[in-house]
Image (cartoon, rainbow, N blue to C red; front, side, top):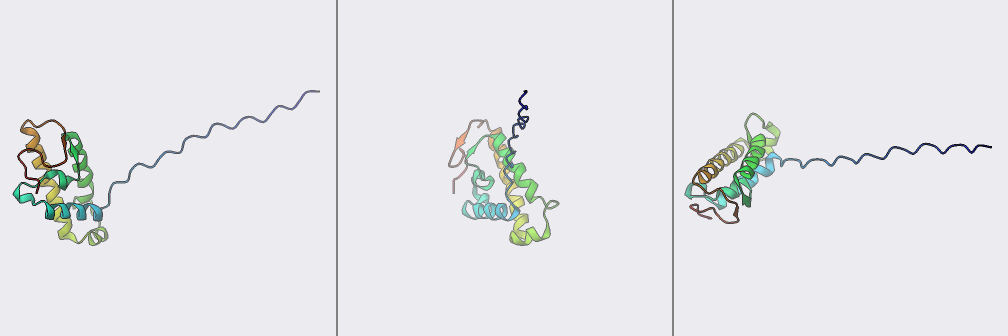
Length: 129
């Protein structure tokens, strides 16, 4: 007599996709940026690395962080309740302008021929606070 065939093997399970890192929320970014600006005065040669929240920098990394922050900080992207939790419209507006200024400083620094990676501290020509 023939033996019954074994049931078919189940298809291998597909790996569960890992959730992508969720960008920081408005409250976290606003508080971090404004705290960095208080600590490292942007009007006196602030270290733009602190405003952008980067420790090791090249222009590609700076652009990535700038875009990430602007997607959250831009006035057209903010929701009123998130603005309130982040300290209000003025705190969000301040953080938006600080990040814009920090990005401009980073571009000027890069245009000055400083294309290498900078670790910690301030790039040459900028006070570290």
